[in-house]
Image (cartoon, rainbow, N blue to C red):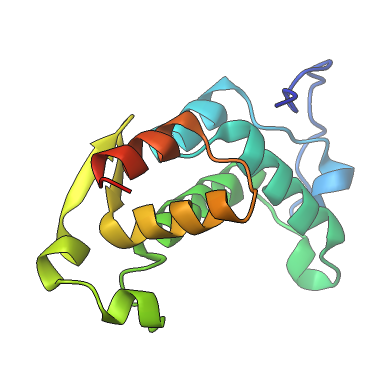
Length: 145
C-alpha cells in the first residue's frame, strides 16, 4: 500500500477560533497520531485515507473543526470500536447459527482480537476475491476456516 503520509510536512497555519476545514487547515497525522491509530489496532495509512476522504467530502458547518488531532483520535477510537463490535450484535443468519461460546471466544493475531464471526466474514471476503491481510488469513487459520 502506498504510504499516504509521505511528502513535505509543512507547519499548519494557526487554528482559527471558529475552526477550519481539513483541506484548508493543512493538517496531516504526525508520528504520534499514526502511533495512536496503530495502538487502536488500525492501519494508519488506511484510516488516514478514510478520514481524509470523509472530511474533504463533507459540507456545511459540521465539516469545520477547531482541533483536527482530537478529531483524528475520536475517529480512531470509533473505528476501533466498530471493528471490535461489527459482528457482536449482528442479525445476519450466519451469526444466528453459531454456538454461543464460539461467538464470544477470541483469537488474538497481531494485537487484534478476532471472534468466530469475524473469521467467517474474512472467509466471505476472501471468497469474493477481496484482499485478505496476512493477519486476517491467520485468524481464519486459527478458527480452522
